Length: 189
Image (cartoon, rainbow, N blue to C red; front, side, top):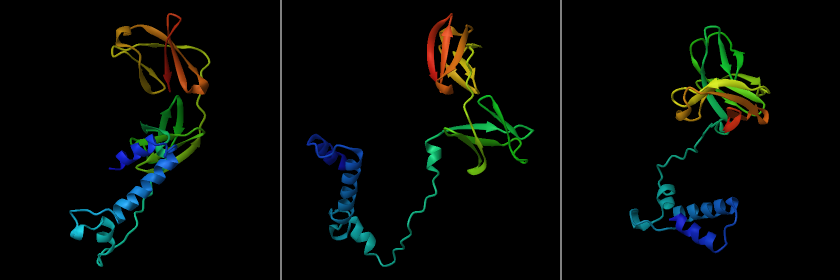
């Protein structure tokens, strides 16, 4: 129901930004819950009147402890080896004793990585992406992929068995893939 109104507001030029759209939506939700008659409710009242008029209603505000930063960062899973170490993007990190054999989540930010075990922060470490100036070679697997820094990147299954050269650029954010000296693909790392 709201989208129809929102589309009309946008067509008429009443909404020009996300903030204005959110304000419009907030007003609409308030109207829907406090003023709009609903035929399924007693006396066709709005949902808010039914909810707030109930004496036995227990109001408990929703408490959410969401780690929003984790939604905005790169997250990978690694298994901790027998020596309580993990390898992440060609670097090794020692963890405290007791994590051998378990899987941990690595959350990468611009300047650090956080290592979590079952949503518990185990360790936070400063991190810089290692950059490689020289080209390296990789053989394309039968599935058309190459392995680089613990990840597999799709190249082309038709090129299976061929050897390509790879080189990092942009501070380790991209990977150039060359075949016989010709740029084949640019990958995001």
